[in-house]
Structures are given as C-alpha cells and as structure tokens.
Amino acid sequence: MEEMASKKVIPLFESIPPSARRNRALRDRKKTLRGRIEEYYQVAGMRKVALAVDDDSVFVELLWEVLRHRCDVIVAFNGLEAIEAYLRWREHIDLIVTGLVMPIMDGDELAARVRRVDLDLPIIVVSGCYEKLDLLKKRDDLVTMRKPFTVRDLEDAVDSCLRR
Image (cartoon, rainbow, N blue to C red; front, side, top):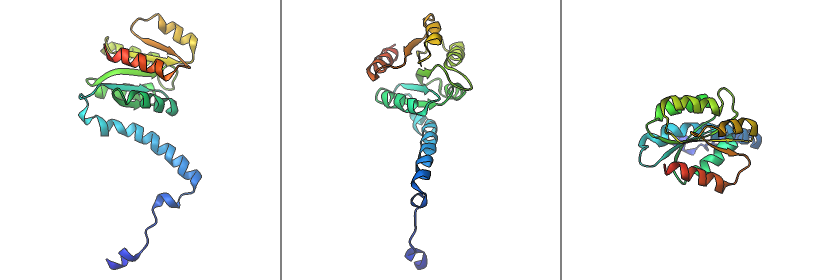
C-alpha cells in the first residue's frame, strides 16, 4: 500500500498531445451533450423543457446557451435522434427548436411526425435555405426563422412559444 502511495500518478489527459486533446474534447463535448438527457431530466417537470435539434454542433450549443436560461434543454443532432428523445420525454417537452436541413431526417419530417402525436406543441424551424423555409411558412402550426438572426430574435420566438 505504501509503495502505491509513493508512485507519482500521471493523469491520462496530460499525456495526450494538445492536438489530440482538442479532438478528444470535441468528441467528449458531443457525448456530454447527448448524455445530458439521462442526467438532467430525471426531475423534468419542474421547469419547461425544450428539444434543440441540428446537425451542426456549434449551432446546437448556441441553442443550448440561449434556451438554458429559460428552460431545461434536451439536445439531438439529427431528426431521428430527436424523434427518439421526443418519444421518450414527450410528456415533459414544451418546445422543439430544429434546423431544417439535416442528415437522416430533416426538420420538416421531424415536425410532421411530431404533429401526428401532438398538434399543439410549439415547433420553431430555423434555416438558411430560404426556398424550403418559405414553403413551411404557409403552415400555421410552425414558427419559422431565417438564418442569420440575432440572439434576441431567437429569445423572443422562444419566449412567445413557451408562453402558449
């Protein structure tokens, strides 16, 4: 026992070169965002809950930063993950904010599938693809936002949807 105490322990993280550390940190951040579903939402129901969905992890992080001051946030990185999260946590989810163009399942398909189950859930669809977004504007059950937008615009849209 004394022998082990005298040995210097070098943490694994310090032995990894900086470039590998950066890549590992990005992977870990993505895993951490996904893992928050299990850790944070055991007590969901005390605050409003939003589902933030996009394939761009930087945009998802921006959504999380804006939303976390107003509600708890579940994140997903494509429409299929969002459907899985929605089906698991639907009794707690009060809002979905999603990108429109994503791999596996886009935001339009996500919204259509959610509408089959819940007609009243507020859904905000965000995109820089104006042609597709203009087609969705005709639907009165969705809130659409064009990129680029200000944080204030997003906050206003979220606050409006959460007040419903």
